[in-house]
Amino acid sequence: MPAPGAPGSFPAPYPPLGGGTPGFPEAAQPDRAPLAPPPPQGPFAPQPPHIASVPQTAEAGQQGPGPQTAQAAPAQHAAAPTPQGTQGGTQGPSAPSAPQGAQASAAAPRTLQYRFDGPEDAPVLVIGPSLGTTWHMWDRQIPELSQHWRVFRYDLPGHGGAPAHAAASVAELGDRLLATLDGLGVQRFGYAGCSIGGAVGADLALRHPHRVASLALVASSPRFGTPDEFRQRGVIVRTNGLEPMARTAPERWFTPGFAAAQPAIVEWAVQMVRTTDPGCYIAACEALAAFDIRAALGRIGVPTLVLVGAEDQVTGPAEARTLVAGIPDARLALVPGASHLAPVEQPAAVSDLLLMHFSTAWQQDTSAAIPVLPHVTAPAAPSAPFVPVAEIAPAATPDAVAPTPDDRYEQGTKVRREVLGDAHVDAVNDTADVFTEDFQELVTRYAWGEVWSRDGLDRRTRSVITLTALVTSGHLEGLAAHTRAALRNGLTPAEIKEVLLQTAVYCGIPAAGAAFAVAQKVIQEETTPPA
Image 1: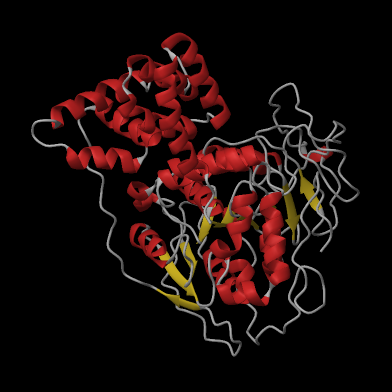
Image 2 (image 1 turned 180 degrees about the horizontal axis):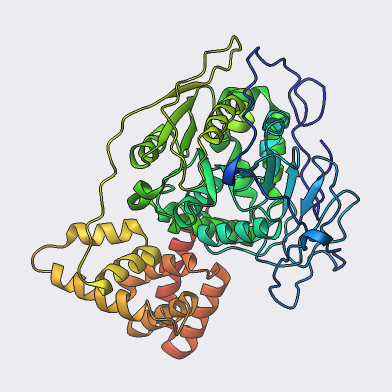
């Protein structure tokens, strides 16, 4: 595979399985009829990309003076076409000059690092990565997909050598992606994304439905675990770096059999995590903690394939069926013998399913409305051992969240859960009775819905004040919960220690000593990586 025109040091593509071209398996693919889509028509046919050729001369890693807008070159001044598969772009002002055959988008933190593969006149298919990976996780799908589509791959901020401009939410990632595509003249596209990449696609289908022609959600979910899980992961990374995440990545991403049989690929995956910017990884965890579109699934109006590894323990078949139950025009495909990174573990099966889905979606285009796919049946089973199995599975509609008439109570509940965690809030609610429920409502509405929700101070500062106030007043029964909250709000153990040392001077040694004992226990629990 040609080297992408992108800055920084990239982890190498997959090692070959037993020789052959780096990045692709040598094993023969099963005989199957090619799935060639018809020529693009209507809004599916992309406009010729007008790519700004902006040499990047700033030193790598240097912060620019501020956000700059990526500009598309006018048609009459468009850059000359580049060789297939070599066109790349960068995010931010820190990229060095792009190598020969590459294009660089204007220096702007609001754009993303990208590359193209496939014919320039084909419809554009955008492919998004999983958290902790780079665009190389899709290497083995590119030979087939790029025969029919202009494949656009992007890296998350701080991943794969991309500049480390952290994004605070899934919606912000989607906005940066659209800004990048706008600068290239791409208005309408198909979209496939894995995990957080799938979340970006679902968000775009909700907020910009006429930009997304068809959607594939791979190993994705309308809500990723619980907010507590991802905020806890952020605390661990902030304290210990990315090594704990890198060490546990193989068991999250691959089946045990694949991990044992392909140690080189497993090591490649571990290195992707190790070379990710910790701050951007933490920001992505916070974005996933806040992501929840369960109540909005019915508004996704594009044809959607929900693809999941049958052995995925991260976002498995249960989450996939929730997506299918909620999205009106969704299909479910289970890939046996695959875990979370199904495109890596079962490349032939995933390629077949994506080809089938997007080929059909491109046939149903109209200019006036988002197309609706007819019912798609599974392709005939090939003779290869990796057999893609597609099924349409009924599932119960997710429970709707009952609205509350008091906006302050609703906001307070949200903020209280974000700061203290679901486990703490659930425990408090479980112990409430007729005598105490009014008090808990008061706390939620006033303390969390009004004071903690104000814009005057950030949550880090509010945590510092709260820790100090609890030590000063001797109310150590709440200190454990707020030490945990302080970690999730971005304070490090070293900063918490400084806060308690400060209280020792002004509040007294005994009070601070008791506070240190409480905080030490919580910090050990929260920052110890999983075994």
